[in-house]
Amino acid sequence: MRRAVRVWAPHASGVDLVLADRRVPMTRDGEHFEAEVDAPDGAEYAFSLDGGEPLPDPRGVRLPDGPGGRSAFFDSTAFGWTDDAWTGTPLEGAVLYELHVGTFTPEGTLDAAAGRLDHLVELGVTVVELLPLAPFPGAHGWGYDGVAPYAVHEPYGGPEALQRFVDAAHAHGLGVCLDVVYNHLGPDGNRLPEFGPYLTDAHGTPWGDAVNLDAPGSDEVRRWVLDNVRQWLEDFHVDGLRLDAVHELHDDRALHLLEEMSRDVDELAERTGRLRWLVAESDRNDPATVTPRGAGEKVGGLGLHGQWADDVHHALHVALTGETQGYYADFEAPDALATVLRSPFFHTGSYSTFRGRGHGRPVDAASLPGWRFVASLQTHDQVGNRATGDRLSQLVGPDLLACGATILLTSPWTPMLFMGEEWGAGTPWQFFTDHTHPEIAEGTRRGRRAEFGSHGWAEEDVPDPQDPDTFHRSRLDWSEPAREPHARMLAWYRDLIRLRRATPDLRDGDLSRLDVRWDQATGWFVSRRGDHLVLVNLGERAQRHDGGQVLLAWGDVATEASALVVPPRAAAVVRAPL
Image (cartoon, rainbow, N blue to C red; front, side, top):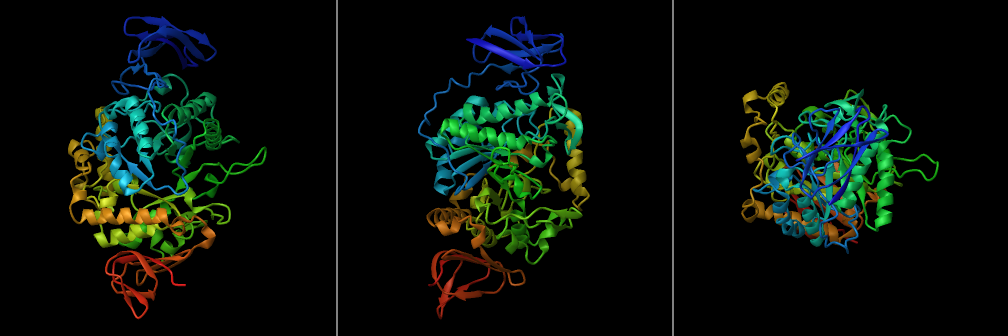
């Protein structure tokens, strides 16, 4: 097969394309080098800059031997797609399901995950959100230390396995969202700076130098990011992307990368006739992230389609568990839960004790619908970044977990579940790595234990991220959903999602219509959703409310003298009396 190969290497005097049996001198074209060769799919190749060691392609789609090896040719157009009738899935009305390929099944592959799609269909979710798939050193990890954003981790099955997964998901009526990381590159196996200024010290991030979006040479780096967005959405038929920690995408240009990205994605959707969308993880509490772009020369927002709303998680977590350490301290406020059920941000300019400063901006209820904000009870971050990776189901009993699910799944936000949450999984999800560089491995181990040791944990109680057992403990146990108390919890999640889908009031994103009451002292929560009421009792004493038709209940909700009696740690969704 004839292939055109091109690489950006602005500082190199010469570049050779290195194949298994020969070196091919490449022709300079400005800051790029080009060559044409005959090579089959799977043939390995690399680039040698100025006679140096062979390096993998910065845009390589397959790395058979991981980041330390060579790239392999992969024809993304060769796959036999069967989803021609698929037109995408909207974020509005969606229920997301966050999934880590390596721990979702015992096999830890995309093909094995595809074998569990029936479970997700029966659960009622509409979009599968895959944690990052970019290759990283070793076999297992969270995926946020990837160094080759164009490729798919080979132990998961490689790029064709992702195409098979997406095609199978669409055949099941499920959309696919891919978590991507553009704010940094992993510390182990990153060779991109040898090609050009992919990183800059003009900005710093928690992981070191920032990806170069605005310094000299950044035009090509931005193009590298934007072309990768197009690759996933077009070549792999992915429906949406979750953009990791966009507050660490440092870009001082007038046209921010995120605005440019949202424009490109909207143009792609229009051209292909398929819905595509972008969801940001952002720590800024800034509604401009999802405010539409301005028309013509008019300045507007960044135009992303959705963003995570971690404040909702934090307020729910505090209400359910009583934990108030660290950033949870802000959400001890008596009005916190009610606030985040009316607006996605608790801090809208108010003082954050955790940050030691004012934080956030208010959301305009008249212009931004609730579905643009993704909310959750549990996420990979909020579980895995606990010292021992304990899930909410390991912190509270089934009754409180069901109450939390009731609030989330009847809220105006786009709800997202973390894999296993739906049955109250008994397995933890811990922080695990498989670094192959001894110094990085030891530094990760010591850093993790020191971090939690400073918060009062005995260091020996913090799992070793490099220990394979830490990874193995984090796998879901698929025997749990068939036995109690997990089976009852799974049925509750299914019923809540089914009722949300069937009842427009319960997914209504109009923030101007919200009526939420919360009494922290008694644990009594009441939300009016159109002609429906959500009654949740987190307290220790029964609560009464004017009667109505009970559509769904957790616990022995009873009717006494035309009033509904909700016992402790119980919940009900009610059609309100006329």
